[in-house]
Image (spheres, helix red, strand yellow):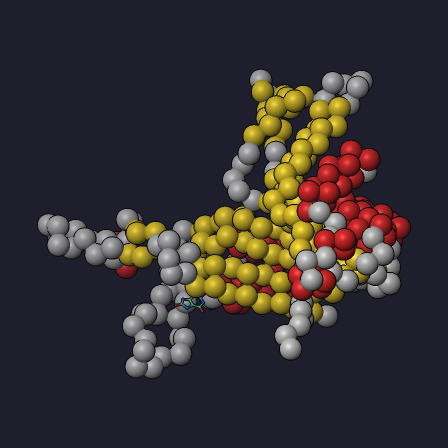
Length: 295
Ligand SMILES: O=c1[nH]c(=O)c2[nH]c(=O)[nH]c2[nH]1
């Protein structure tokens, strides 16, 4: 007899925008996010017996996210995610775990005539600040915070050589190459016992995000990279040292390759090695270097 061994369901891509209006100054602050809610619990019969009595409609989940955004702060996303996740496990007896993923899209305030504009913003790149908050009945709240979609490139200061060589190897040793990646960097917080504990940690969330971002960018720029693996590890070490409350750091870095182009077929043009100027950016395949560092 077959049985359900794992089941979860929910609403993905719930888009929410919230504005905060500062009455005195006329300044407004905006937050735009995309939320995903996934519930687990005593829901097998909805799959096996068409028993919808155990189904909290995904439409109701969407409504709940709107109501929670109205009634509670949406920043930092760690707190908002924890509030929404806790709501589901506390409200429904048969729901035992709720995973809430919050992706914050960055709106940066415009500077107009040299001054910060009170209500106009621009989107600078596709970087998002992501949080996954999971409330598990009787077990507390686990939170992973992350930087995602941060696209970086350095035009020199990176090498890759003395790697394993065998009959499958064609890549030459490279002592000066372009390095480009889209940073996905996450850090797992030690378990929180409840919402109060998450609320008490609020100032730490923004600080950790700022520290992780600065360490990532500074290390990427300053390090003469011998490999993505080593540069990534150096970032992890620094983040672990800078944020004592986190239990682990993880990176997932695609290696976005830029290939030299031999143009010597045209009038003997030199465009390789030290003469390389025009490159062909590759969309695929890409390297993918991942690592988790724990205490
Ligand atoms: O930094 C790198 N790490 C690798 O594992 C690898 N493999 C490869 O072909 N190029 C690179 N670059």
